[in-house]
Amino acid sequence: MADLDSSILLAFLEADGEPVSGDRLAKELGVSRVAIWSRLERLRASGYVFAASTRKGYALRSVPRHLDPALLDAHLRRLKVTPKVEFLAEVDSTNSEAERRLAVGQEAPFAVLARTQKAGRGRLGRKWHSAPSGNLYLSLAFRPFIPPDRLKPFTLWMGLALCAHVEKSLGLKLGLKWPNDLQAPDGRKVAGMLTEARLDADSVRELVFGVGLNLTGAPKDFPADLRASAGSLEAALGAPLDLNREAAGVIAALFRAWEQFEEGTWSRSFRKLWSHHDVLAGKSVRVGLRGDPIAGVVDGIDDEGSLILRTGGGRRAIVSSGEVTLRKP
Picture 1 (cartoon, one colour):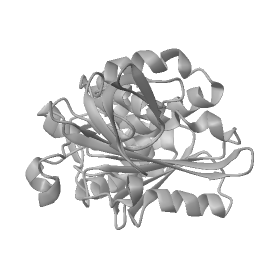
Picture 2 (cartoon, one colour):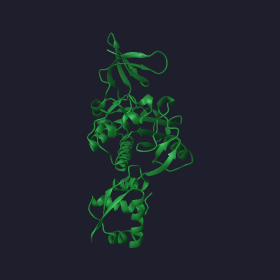
Picture 3 (spheres, helix red, strand yellow):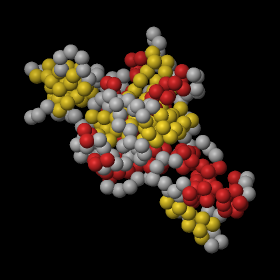
Picture 4 (cartoon, one colour):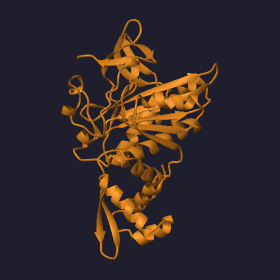
């Protein structure tokens, strides 16, 4: 994606609102002044606003309200994200696309990002609502060759890394509802995660981590069955977001989180982040997936990310997977 438009936009991002000389751009990028002017006109037509400044050049004043491959790439280059990021206007599922690319031998790690999904997938075979613009549908693909047991806390760790990034970037504290939901402070779900792996007998051969993150949207914008429970970062903040900057920041944070997981350094901050973002601590819940549901009070997680329940009579239950619902007091 690192084409001329991306390089031009990177120069404007680095100028931080100050004018950029067309002559300087032409010299630095090795093209004519006319080529720069032509590209700026094309960017204007796609929603960018540039202000001309006499004898100083142009200043970037606003950007489109949708994910744009050139601007996203400029932000990724500024953050020094080195894995390849594949940008698609539409796809059935970013996880499915990442799996197909792994199957044909694409070098990993890489990311697949789409403006919309026709068949987005959530956990337990559920459909993930994928509005046509304004949200982040993202999958990261790896060939880790690690023992399967090491993978148990992976999804929770990636979710905690995403929570930490959002709090640092936007000042918004998200909560993580075990095992894979991210919630705004008002309890509305703003993201869901789905990890899928291909295993050999003794190692994880291929790994895909998918996240759907609602960047924009008010409750009225969601389907009727989701309006009471779904939310977005913009709605929680009460302020508009720069979608491409936030998308790039999320991608960079998740790739860094993967590096920490692969190196084994993730465990140093895992417990601290969990205690900060856990929304179930001390709550009375019911956990069910297969067989009879288990009811109890949440008493944290173990080192592998399994949920610990106090079930009465001093007994504890360790739950490695399941669907959690809150019980009424």
